[in-house]
Amino acid sequence: MVRKSVMARPSSLFHVFFLHVALVSSCTTSTEIRSEHSRNHVALFIFGDSFFDAGNNNYINTTTLDQANFWPYGETYFKFPTGRFSDGRLISDFIAEYAKLPMIPPFLQPGNIQYYHGVNFASAGAGALVETFQDAVIDLKTQLKYYKKVRTWLRSKLGKVEAEIALSKAVYLFSIGTNDYMSIFLTNSTVLNSYSKSEYVGIVIGNLTTIVKDIYKRGGRKFGFINLLPMGCAPGIRIIKAENNGSCLEEASSLVNLHNKALSELLRKLEKQLKGFKYSLYNFNINLRQRMNHPSKYGFKEGKGACCGSGQFRGVFSCGGKRLGKEFQLCKNPNEYVFWDSYHLTQRVYKQLADQMWNGARKPNSVWPYNLRDLFQAF
Image (tube, rainbow, N blue to C red; front, side):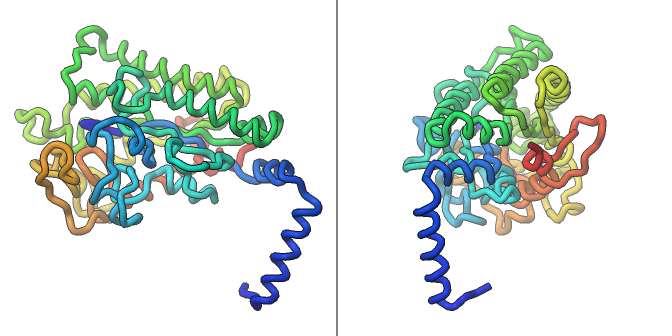
């Protein structure tokens, strides 16, 4: 997101394996195997920012403000830093698990990646606007270009018809927009001198609309979104204005509210305009806010301050000692905290939210017509 950041005898197993290989070799072509693969799995394509970035920023020319490939990131689950902005897994990792998919790899990860199950294009610091932290992150437009390369790869491997089936069944998951607004407060941006808040939100939503329509045009039909978190209440934003005495930054919160309303309206409009368009919109904002304001209700001890960082609320983005200062504090148990660092969440929170995104009750005539399980099962 954010910048600056039943066990069998061995002999039986051998005979079963040998028979299986023989049958496959004699009766099934490699093309048929790939085609069967595409029919039996719903792929997951992931776009967005650091809430979903599984390590793409490890492989670009950027600064540590947009990277998390150092200790203590990843310490809870992976036991080493993967580039994820958390102590462990992200929402997108849990969604892949619930969909019975392997962990979805970052697009830029070196090696011979197979894209049958999907791929992750997200980049920490990315926004819907190309100008957001430009040249330091992979903006949404570039993520779309990467997706087009994957689409070409699938067509070459599966054939045009099978690839189109796979792409129409796939789920396209988005977390985008936070950085377009956060950058205003973390840099010397004067954008709000040129546009009103509603105009600026309109530009951000317009860029997102273009990307979604382009994916739809190329066969995508099932889209999942999370709206924006209570950005003004993140530890790193609370400390921006000393005169606020640690209260939430209202200017940031108002932009988030405008964006979330516009996103909801956009998706309802696209559902009416685009035949076969299905979407899930998870209220990330309100569900995270509940955990921040009432942490004990959800099994946490601290809802406002971060586990890793320095200063008030540990809001200084110094986790790991490679960014805004070498000194930082680290809590003993991340599971007790809602926030992992100044802007990002702990694995435990991500799992709770992913559970809701996957299993949430359908609400007719609401902003949440489908949960993510519905999308994966819908053909």
